[in-house]
Length: 545
Image (cartoon, rainbow, N blue to C red; front, side, top):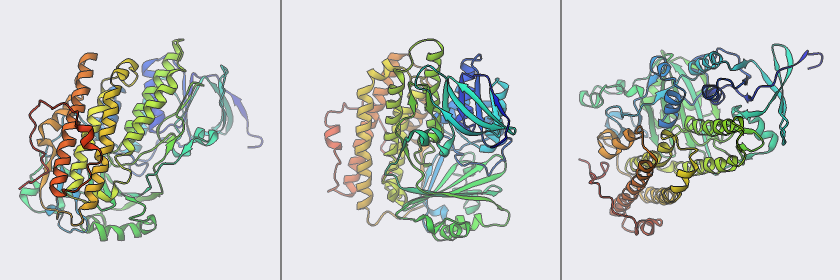
C-alpha cells in the first residue's frame, strides 16, 4: 500500500503463517518444549473469534484428542469448556421417518479413551490466550503479503500488514498453517489432486438437536447410559452420503451433508433452501427437527472437492506445512486434528534438532515419507467407498474394520510417542506393510460386497453396540498403556494378527452371503498368517436376533 509506514522487526526463531487450530497448537507445542524459543504467529482474522458459526472440524477422535488433552496439556479446558463426545453413532435411516426402528451403530457407554466436540471459535480463542501466556508473539489481524524462502543458511523473510503498518520479519523457520489459502503450496506449486471426489455443505443452528426426541419408545431411549445420544457425532447414513450432527458447547448444533459428487451433485444442496429440501427427501425426520423455529440459522457454507494431497510438506531448507495448508482427507472419522497432531510433532522434532545443533535435514524426507504413507493409507478408507454408506449390513462391518486398523497401527504410534522413533519404526516396517496390504484388500472386498447387495438388508431397530465387543473395547483402552520398546513391538505384532483374524472373519461372512465373491487377494495374504491364539467372540454384526 503506497505510503504505508514500514517497520522491520526482530528475528524470531519460527514464523507461523496462520493462527488457526494448526498454527496455534504448533506454537504452544514449540514453547512448551523450549520456552526460550521465539515464535511469531501471523493470523489474518482478528480475535476473539465468534463462537459456534466459526469453522467446521468440530469433532475429534483419539489421536487429536490425546494431542490436545495430554501432549498440549489442555484437558482442563476440554473438560470444562467443551463437550465430552459420546463416540461416533450411525443411523442407517435413508428416507425414514422412524429412526428408532432403524439399525443404529455406536456405543451404549463411553469407551475408555476420551474425545471431545469442539466449539472451534471458543477453542481457538483459548489457544490464542494460551499461546500469548506462554510468550508467543501472536499477531491477530495480520495479513501476510509476501515471503521469501531461503535455500541456504540465511533466514527466511516475511512481509505482512498489521496495525496499519507494513512490516518485515526474518525467521530461521517458516511454517505454513494458513489453511486452504495454502500460501507456501501456491508459491512453490505443491498442490496435488487425489481421486476422492466428494463435496460438503454445512450450517450451524441455535440450540441442541436431541435424537432422543425422535422417539417415545422407553426401551430405545434407555439403550445408552447415560442416555445422551446428542453428545455423539451422529451420522445419518444413506447411499453415497452421510449427514452430521455435532453439538457445540456454546449452545448450538453443527449440521452438514457430505456426499459423493457423482451420486449427489453439489448443485442439489448448495443453498440452505436446497439443502433442507434434500434433507426432507433423504432424512425426513431429521429435517423436521432442524426446521423447528427455535433452531435459528446461523450460517451456511459449502465446499466442492474438499479432499486433496500435497507434493511436499517438510523441507530440509527449514520450512514446513501443517494442517489444511498441506493436505486434507475427509471429515468422516474426523481425521483433521489427527493429521495436525502428527505433522506438528514432526515439525517440532526437526526444529528441536536444529536448535540443538544436530543434523535435522536428513529427517525431512523420512518424516515426509511417513506422513504421506499415513495420508495415503487413510485415504483408502474413503475413496470409492461412499456407495456403501447406506448399506446396513456392510457398512457396520467396514466401520469396525476401519476403527481396528486405526487403533492397531497409527494410534499406538502417536500415543506411544514413537512417531519419530526411526529405529522402532524400522523394526516394525513389515508389520505396517502387512497392515497396509490387508487394508487395501479388505476395502476392495467391502466394495465388491456392497455392489453385490442389490437388495440390502432392511434396517431394523437393533443397536449394534461396539461397547460390548470385548476385544474392540480393549484395543481402545490399550492405547493408554505405557510400554517399553520390546512390549510395544509385541503389541503392534499382536494388533496385526488381530487384523488378520478380522479380515478372515469378514471374508467368511461375505462368502456366506455371496459365495462367488472375489476374495480380492485376501486368501493369499492370510494363507501364511499365524493363528490368533486369543479366544474371540463371534462378530457381533452377523445373525443378530
